[in-house]
Length: 433
Image 1 (cartoon, helix red, strand yellow):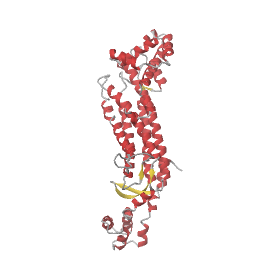
Image 2 (cartoon, rainbow, N blue to C red; image 1 turned 135 degrees about the vertical axis):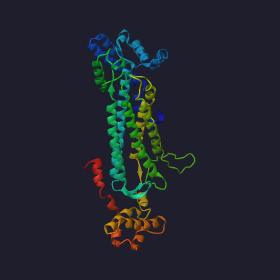
Image 3 (cartoon, rainbow, N blue to C red; image 1 turned 180 degrees about the vertical axis):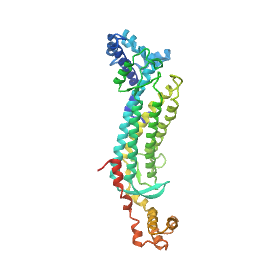
């Protein structure tokens, strides 16, 4: 995790303080249920809560113990015993380290998911506001980066809004997939811990029970979680790249915010670079870099090994913190995006009406010309325009193969034809007005 690309709320989820607090709550809740079952004395469970509820666990002391034990959970339990006293011997009865580690990881990922959903909600709100603002702002649509046919800038943004609606659903599904609790003991048989303990801890920690944990929660869940994050990151990148293209000097249809006092280049004072969206492209790569290692973590040896552990200590914080940051940066860009309708109109007219070529071709076919002949006539005149030889409409009017009256030809160049179903698309995306 790089502090430059992080928000405090996301970082806090992965802090040592938060982790040890979750570990304690898992152990203490388990002790409470064990006391109800008569496995440990009620007084011991009450003392564990009383002495540990408000304490701040000493990460440095735990690290010091771990240098000897070479085991993080044992080091933590040893430190808890220093704070709680004799009753701490009743902690961790029948449990194994993975019960604590995996359940804690599930809590952290679920909390991170909630932040990510909040970030997507902010992106959705920004996109809807700007889409409605530019619902009928005409601009050119591009395929292969080349002028195609007219669209509106609002339609562009509506498409991204629909994509981030899917992103939200993916994150909610990923959260449900990952939020499971395992308190099943060595190799997951519950031989030394009652399944009722697992259910109790799950309820208290806001998790579902893992149906079968082979001492670890199956890592297909984690693979699906990080894959979902990777897809959301790719959606972030797709919108970021669109903005970067629109900000190019020769296009300049939209532009990132550029604040007073901001500098674009150490060498060239005139520069206004798309640094925010370029940064988003890079962050998306970082988030996606977690996907393959998460997939490779699925295949563990037999009931468990710890080859996944070192991977997850890195990708858990990194992927969630970076995506959280990226979503809020993207929302800020959309909220303050500078839009230039005059440049959109200029670019739309750059090829002198060639964007209406399909409509001319279709009108010829409806007038009795074969599709092949209509295509050839329209394309031949369009290529003259590409070469800078004149205006498209003038060439069409002068071509004997184009059998349409001048008035009909001129009507085929009406922009409104291309926006007549904008309301229909908006109703699909945002609901009926």
